[in-house]
Image 1 (cartoon, rainbow, N blue to C red):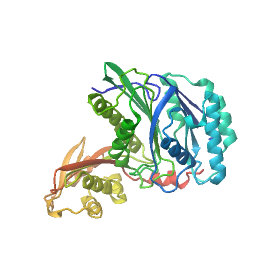
Image 2: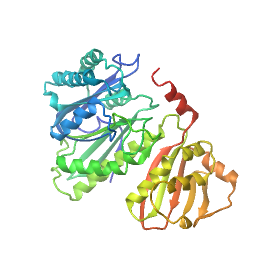
Image 3: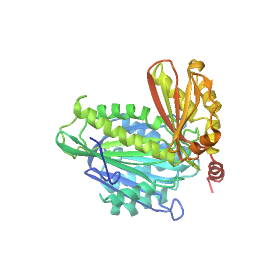
Image 4: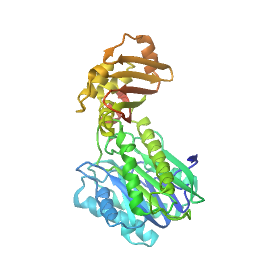
Length: 407
């Protein structure tokens, strides 16, 4: 049984964190450090964008080498992306600085950056900041919260979650923090997610669990259709819970897998709830598809439609936009067998049944769509598979936020 507990990345045994303002942004928290007391098994997933930030490229190499990891340093306010050789050198120095503080090799350090693309990376400020923050590392929940706040950019609140489950008679914990508000789109987007666990698990199995979980969590969300250069999800497992190491797909494996997926789903939903300028959280549920992949594609097509998003912002029950987005998804289905239903706390309203439009109460529909959490239920009649995607509406404030982002 999964039990949600207080905290974030410092909730599991053997992790310390800190965060603070070091001068990258004017007076705002802009750097976080996360450290494992013992070398941790590490796996990760990164942006699908061809243009990748220097931290992403370096982290990908380290993951390929299957190194254990001791620490991660993260900055906000500057993405260190598209910054040429200067950016690469700066990113390396960033890693080396934390490595020196921990007295380990630089290959045991990961880095991450988020913020404006293409601006010179302030490496001297970053290095000084690492030295300043390092002594404040601690395992308290408060220090984990500071780290979660320090990785924010346009986020309006920090995103943390922690859970515990029993494995092999031991209580193991998983903690996490994430950031992301804009440039959020299926196949990873400007989001950083750092997950810690004290479970002992074989690296290959942890990697498999993460990759599978991502497909139905982070890859099923969208805010604005833009895929970032810096997307990073990292899981550290230090084994300090003392459970017998998970080395095969047994009951312990399934318990851990379910718990990690719970964490990823929680963070993924938080990311879209905090979408830039968002006023509504939207869930799109598709059932009756031939394959799960077909259901995913249809759900993502609807959740990424700007016309659907703006209709939701205006509380307009324009189901034609939903059907249109389904139609250009590339998945074949019989339009004469489609049901579309909207749900919220104010009730449910059917808009289409078996491909036939239903004359509905516009006032009731508006009441349902004025709620801040809405589900679009779509039924097709091609098979038995289903999928869910999450997103938000598109408001005036999204344009305002991104119109002056660099200022």
